[in-house]
Length: 78
Image (cartoon, rainbow, N blue to C red; front, side, top):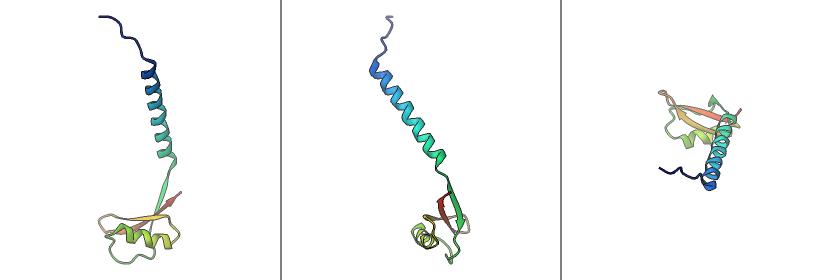
């Protein structure tokens, strides 16, 4: 068999993919989220949108329902 030529386009695409993959990894590592139970949410949490609204009134950026006890957990960047 004849040896295959390496295409400059292939090298460019491979390098681009590796750079993109490394940027995605850095973003995930740097973005840390802190969670705390809501102090104002009453009852069982079934809709994360309701939880998020209450959490925003507590100066958090978001919130979601979690766990078997269906608690409202508020989140914000650490």
